[in-house]
Length: 295
Ligand code: KPL
Image (cartoon, rainbow, N blue to C red):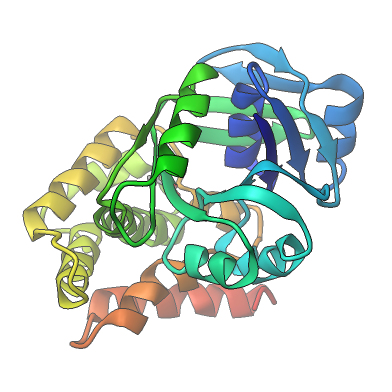
């Protein structure tokens, strides 16, 4: 398969490196990362150690079998506009937050799949990505139902050793992931702690309250997400990624804009009753972003 990874950050680079062991992969990202990958290859360290040799560039190629979109949620509209001029057979978003697939589908002329990814990654240096944890890429039609395209993509990922499953209940999966991200990302970013620190307050902490609100909003919009399920998934992720720094904590530490609008902000936007915890977390992160000139 000819796969173009749009967004060579930590997750895009890790997936690109893993997929390049079986497929023709092009990483689209920024300098100095893509230049280093072009000259020296991509060094994967951590859980597995190997040197991958994807192509790497700063602009989109004209097309391919799959555009794997891994940019930050606030860049989705720009990427969608660029993809509109390309010819891909399918597009898969593995981004955080809600709404990315809709933005992409409005621009491109091919099936758009939604994905969630629990692989852990961290960019250490240009050309070097740390593989911090194995996971699963879960993908499917963003509106639910079986998708032959999703089956093909999942099979291609598995052929490269990337654990992947095509599912028919993608809306529920997206809201489950949103509940975990709403709970973990902003709280760890504001408190400047690893995910595992949240285990000290299971059930009654701020993170649990954000997950509870998110499950309630999911049900308000017709997605069957019981509160207990949102809480147990959050506790599971906190346990399994205890040593990880959440993507939002990494953004804050690096002085970058965060994905708060697509995570806690998305919960607030879709809620028909007040969601004070998500609202407060969103306001605090936006205050930090304004203070750093990142909005
Ligand atoms: O997806 C994540 C993120 O950091 O964005 C979690 C699941 C919270 C793992 O760190």
